[in-house]
Image (cartoon, one colour):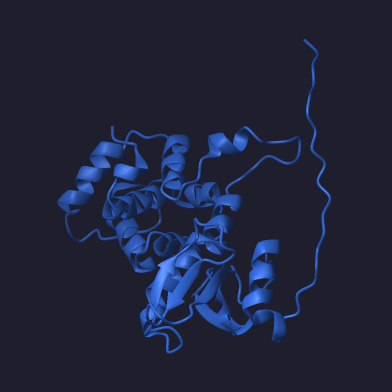
Length: 253
């Protein structure tokens, strides 16, 4: 069975997400850390660069095959390409299937388990929160950017993996100074935002060329709010310092 997430096409990943949510129902939601199907559709759909409705439609496609309370698309035969995915992955157990879905977004529980402490055990809420505050919010921006008056004429460069202190660099043309945009996501219609020291330094240096793009309400219906020069506007950031204790075990040989 092909389990390398890098080699699975996006449409097949969407189909697998729908299959997972249909097969494992509320148990699957809990394993991934979502509180409702709407939240799961929004977050997974945007994080995959697709529409939330696509994830829902694929879940409904498989519902007639499982004993849940939904009827799904029971009035027609399941589409052949969906049936092919079902036959290939139907033997996956809950743990393996959950790990596969998480791997689509670069999330590996095995890596996390290596750095676990004696604090409460990790659960799926961390996965859902990471997607909401990161990848899903970033993909949401990429989806709506062409329709935004502030940014529609800009060329957008994704810098999330460059450690720049922002997620996107935008230029009107090659000769103009760029503006930058940092994306944050929230589960609710409001909540706390945090900036890393580097993000704060860049925002302080670039001022009006720094935008904070906040995607809110992944729980129900995502919408966004844009803050230009956020350190000098309506947002009030307070410095929050924490002291971390690093423990190591040493032996003499």
